[in-house]
Image 1 (cartoon, rainbow, N blue to C red):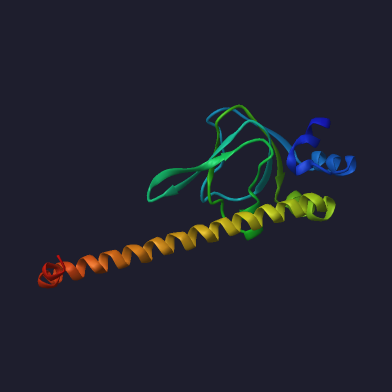
Image 2: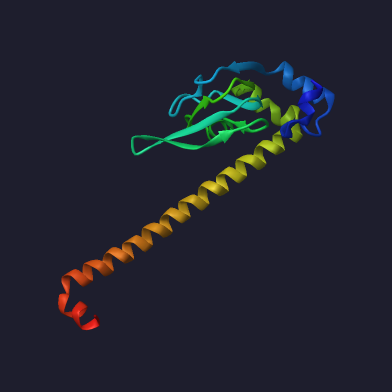
Amino acid sequence: MDDLYHIPPFEGLTEQELTWLIEHSSDVRLQPGDTFFVEDGPAEQFYIMLEGELQVIRRVNGRDTVLGTTPRGVIGGEMALLEGTASKITSRALAPSRLMVFDRNAFREIFAAVPTLGNYIFNIAAQRTANYARNIVSQQEKMVALGKLSAGLAHELNNPAAAARRA
């Protein structure tokens, strides 16, 4: 139990809170290549990475796109549970991994039983939501720039005389 205090989500927790978490979770072990979450699959679990590393993958235009990895101390599964949606990602073990896993009901109880961890979860969820929003805005800005570029090109192609005068 002492080694858990050195993992970010557990820093500052009391022994009673840590004991509650251990009693209300499952210790899940994965081998390289094992899948934990499947994109569009049911979101029934929240986890905290204790050891190892998971690769986070999302299908984009029919192709698997690696979004990143989840090293020790990273939490996962909270977004789908908070939103009540299916999993938006697939996660696959890159190395032998150990996770502290909470089912949907235990996840809900965390916020009352271990408020410090509940606040930590909300802060991470807020950061992830903000990053997602920034990515959407960035994509929209790129689309606007591409639209202006293609409109200018179309104008040049439709008005060769005007293009010749400018050249």
